[in-house]
Every structure is written in structure tokens, then in C-alpha cells.
Image (cartoon, rainbow, N blue to C red):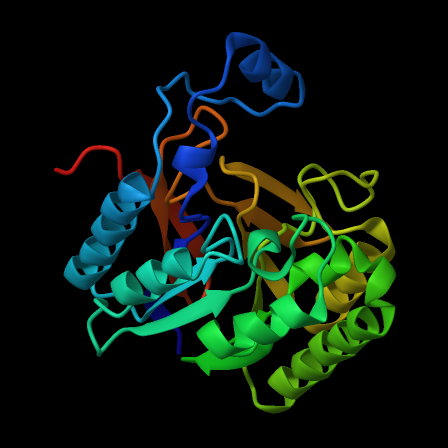
Amino acid sequence: MSDFSFIQLADPQFGLFAGSSGKTNAEIAAFAERGIKLRKAKKITGFAPETALFTRAIERANWLKPAFVVVCGDMVNDPDDQDQVDEVKRIGALLDDSIALYWVPGNHDVTADYFTPEQKYIDRYRKNFGPDYYAFSHEGVRFIVINSSILTSPKTMAEEAKQQLDFVEAEAIIAGHQNDNRIILLSHHPLFVESANEADNPWSIKKKYRKPLVEIAADHGIKANFAGHWHQNNYATDNGIEVVTSGPVGYPLGDDPSGFRVVNVTDTSIDHKYFSLEHND
């Protein structure tokens, strides 16, 4: 029997408010041409806005008391800034001990150039947050966490990418043997943003790796993929899998506010709703 809720957070990305501040009109226009909406703001330093928003998200979780909270990547903006990492972990530790907290690596967590993962950053991530891919079960539902950055710029880590695909397939098979009646994939980059056959783009998993993942999903009952990365909400369904891209806890890059998603899982449905964090009601 499945009847529980979890909270999905994405992209707290400590340091992005400061990194996006002080831009000229020309710079903002250039970002807009790429589909990225920056807010006009005076130059700031530090990460006070992220601290306020992530703290508010954890407070909401403590009040709502979900089964667990998952943070779908980009905990920090700069993986070399230990102050950003320490602040994320400090606030995460405020979550009530009765609520499990799961971390998912994002491209800003395991790369220096935000595109190409490096082993030293993955090792550092593991030291700070734990495994970069793993699986867990809750009330008959299997959750598979992946390091999607390896599947978006895999030129230096092709063997690691293959290992992850093998891991997902093995976990999906195990789930069937354990009578976990559904499987949910948790990632930073979504499987796709429009369709399973879309061209490679900066926002989703590369087609080379998306295709086998979609096939595994179809064969073994992966019903949903919850992700972040885009800093705005997006919903797409193809080949029987719903891909939910959630807006950010931190800095928005679209029209959606900073927020969090509540996901309700029953025997017959996976329903979800996005809530704003921009008003401390």
C-alpha cells in the first residue's frame, strides 16, 4: 500500500543571487535570448537571499511533515566555495530528525565549468553529501537517484555513464523482485523537456543516454522523473513517463517564483503541486 507525500526541492544554488546581480541591460538581454530571465538588481555579495529561502523551505517541510525531502541538485553555485556548502548543510540539518533528507547532485555541484564533470568534484560531493547515485524504497515505491551531469557532458566519463545506466536497470529489476509497485527517478537534469526524442539541448539528458533510460522506464515501470536545473516549472509526458521539472528554491530564471513541490503518492496516482516561497506567509 502506498499513501504518503514527499517534498521536492531543487536548485537552492547558494551564490546565484549575487552572481546574477549587477548585470547591465545588455547582459540581461543576452541572457533573455537564451531563454534565461535575469532580474535587474544592484550588485550584492554573499548568499543571504538563498539562506532565507532555503531556511523557509525547511521550515515548511517541518510543518508539513512529509515522509522525506529530496533536493534535486545545484546546492551551490560554486563547488569550490566551502562556505556555500557549509551553509547548505547547516540549514539542511534543521530538518526534523523524523524526516529523511536525500541529496541529488547537480552540474554546479560536480563540475568546475558547469558542463564537464570531474572526478575530484564528484569525490568532494560524496564527502559533503554522500553517494552521487543510489536507490531507496518507501512504502512499495522505489526511488532511483542518478548523477545526471555525467549523462549530459559525458565525454570524459563515458565508463561512469555506462555504469550508471547499468545501475538504473539493475535497480529497476530488483524493484520488481521486491514487489515495489512503481519506480520514480530523481535527477537534476530532466530526462526531457518536450519529448523523449527531442534533440540534445542544455536542459535535459543527452539523447545518447536518454534513449536507454526511457527504454528501461518502459520495460520496468518507471512512472515519473522529478528534476530541476531549469529554474522554472515544466511538465512533459512521453512513453508512459511523466517528467516534472521544478522551479528553484533559490534564484528563478523564468516566470515561476522560488518555491517547492509537494508530491502525493497513492496506490493509483502520483499527484503534485508547486508552492511559492517568495512570501513568508
